[in-house]
Image (cartoon, rainbow, N blue to C red; front, top):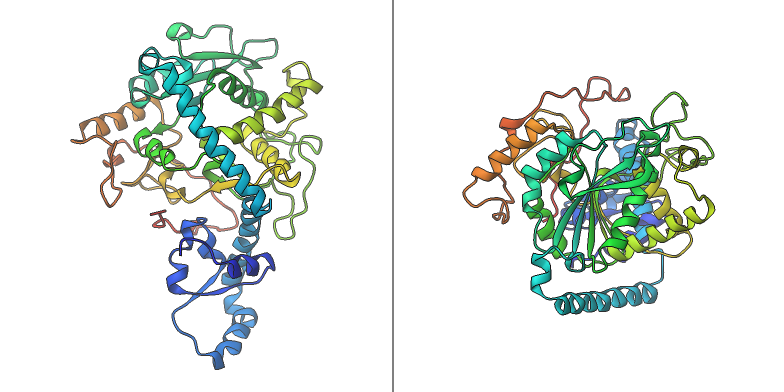
Length: 438
């Protein structure tokens, strides 16, 4: 009962709009967040009026917006199901079995190292690596993270900050004020926003080499307040098999204006011609926070090392030839692996409403609420405020009650100016904000 019916998958594959019972519809978000938006629910319908019902859906001008909405998510879900089921079932089963065997061997290797090694911070005991992208000058935010949510990253989890190198043409100076803290890794990629893809993939390579018994890598920005307890508890329940969790962008358009900081030339990202969306990136996890299983990390690192064999220097010249920034670049790399039949990718987009893209309780999109796990675009003061709220909670935030409710962060809310979507005018973006994977 927990699997999506084959008939529904087939219907979406043929670009049709399935009719499903409301009972089935109410649980579809447990497969993909937007799956309920691609199908039509019904409570009761008589076969004799079904034809008229369908004709009205497709021909009544009053239904145009609703049908366009469903068509949008139909195309989106086609991609997600194709990613998940790209390889044949026997191949997927074999890959999953091998991954679970490797998980057993990983636990055996950690047991051989011993519990004392974990207390010493031995990298062989690390199961979750939290990798925080930062700037050379970002010591204020790094200090705030160390004082707050990083104190909950312990045991089999560890945290590192990653900064770029001070080189000719870089945007920042040579000094990293907190370099002696022991948790800042200086990469060879230059410290420049144009080189952020180089920096991010170098970070993944570093972590994969540094932690031989890794289970998951968590990537975060340094302006994120993260409640690690709920996230780590969830990762503990997830099979580490070609798994990618995060807040997904399912169809953003590459910027083709050379003056824009997100510019992509046709060499960096050749034009794609989606039948509905036109020139778009493949699905990708937004870079402020995502988690990836180590088998998937190994594939990405292998792609990156192949890139380095062709281009020896991590320079701005190389950066100008790669997709930009790093989150859609990762999406492109994974899409290529899927298309080459090397991968069936388990995208987990079901927890969209645990993210706050805007550090405000009054924002119209992904605002802070009492079930938020991660808040983006926070400053050091807001981070400390949120930590004070969580620290004062009687039982902390390591365990959730049946409602999933967490301490209220609204006292730490910041003033934000949301980007206006010109297509919507003054209307706020409508999305299913009460949909949770539970």
